[in-house]
Image (tube, rainbow, N blue to C red):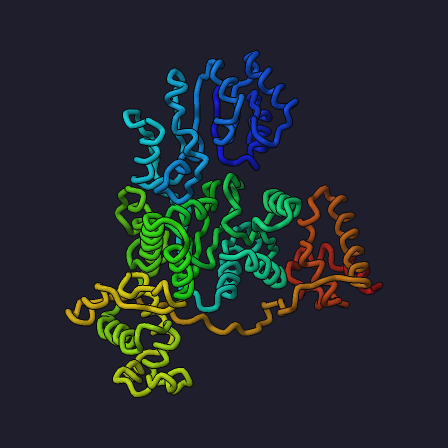
Amino acid sequence: MGLVISPLIALMQDQVDALVQNGVAAAFYNSTLDSRQKNEIRRQAQQGELDLLYVAPETLNSPGFRDFIEDLPLALIAVDEAHCVSQWGHDFRPEYLQITHLRDHFSSAPLLALTATADPQTQKEIRERLGLTQEPVFSSSFDRPNIRYQITVKDAGREQLLDFIRANHSGQAGIVYVLSRTNTEEIAAWLSQKGVTALPYHAGLEPDLRRKHQARFLREDGMVMVATIAFGMGIDKPNVRFVAHLGIPKSVEAYYQETGRAGRDGEPASAWMAYSLDDVVKLRRMIEGGEGAEAFKRLGGQKLNAMLGLCETVNCRRQSLLSYFGEDHNGNCAGCDNCLQPPKTWDATIAAQKALSAVYRTGQRFGAGHVIDVLLGKETEKGIQNSHNKLSVFGVGKELEKRQWDSVFRQLVAADYLEVDLEGYGTFKLNPKSWAVLKEGQKVWLREDPPARKIEKTSRRDKSTPREPVVLDGQEATLFEALRSLRAQLANEQNLPAYVVFHDSALREMVAQRPKTLTEFARIPGVGETKLKRYGEAFLEVLRRA
Ligand code: ZN
């Protein structure tokens, strides 16, 4: 029997079910079992009826388990998600420290550690902690050639996301990572209104609802999950076509792991991200200004810097990403935005000097918004109160627009030419690197941001209208149910899942818009030519009766 140590109690059931389906005698042993069930598993193990036994790391030291397991002839000990044992890694779990003595207790069984995301330093720590320093390492490439990487500047967040989905992945399954629980719900509702079937997922949802959303994402086609990072570990849906980030992950490992959920079937997939100066400031404050030991904060800061480096690089992103994991790639991957459309760079030394100087002259007490107002020579209340309109730097930056200054500040912070002051709220202070630019004229080259997103025009093709989330009641709910039962009937006749006929969002739009003619019906998102012909009249009949 092999023993598998896995951190995912929530997924053990699924993993074991899948193995049993494949004819492997597998079981799990964890805190979700009652004592009768535990006794049964022990009996099976002792009688040699099991091939694999899954346990959580904290179970290893639980009273009784050690005694039970020590007498068994283990054929293998496998530590899954082994990077969780590393304090250097991005996903450290204290309970994993309980497995560091495995080697002493089970010296005769072979020990295997497995991970899909570990930079060289994390790999080293895994080996040391698990006593595997002399043993061979099997490492395959980190490259995911079918994933196209794109990182862009956030100016209109969710609209950019919608543009990206509509242009590249309309009707396909994807995951959107956002930074807060509230965001997951808002953005999922908003996308649904726009005709993209989306559900929220975060750790604060009712467990039943969370499971339901996860199950729908796995089973249905074209579902978009808008989630916090609580979603995804152990999710193995092969046809996720895109992973989008609105906001910046805390580390390159997290980015790699999250984007790695796209395109597991090997078909083309996208990793898309939009981020802003605001995200950087928030994340820096959270990581470096939070509670906890200095060493951890410093580590968090370094990891964020590496992630920012990946965001701001003008070179091949795949090359940067792989080099983070200690792998060489010669660039020109033809599968990242920088290779497909090489960004322009500009000598921003003078702009950087003006920006840094304005931060200094205003007393290192303000955030980008106010400092940019000063550079642009804007007479604001704050400026006048602080006599900033009298400063030598007042109005010296009129050659650039506000959004260009935003870009300068973002890149200065990303490249550590300007420091986020952890005492103030989103305020900046200078550091030795800033002074090298100001005093020694050190050159600063920055990338040119793409032009701002054009304001969306309502065109004939854009069938959606902005609307508050639809809450159905009374008459509307009755109509919705009537449409649903028609959909079920049509689906049954053809032996199809209901969503293949129409998504719920399309039915909701029908309730909201009440189309009376085929032309009006054609404007409902999700109604294409074929569906119009096939289902139009039947649905209109129900709608006309309402
Ligand atoms: Zn590239």
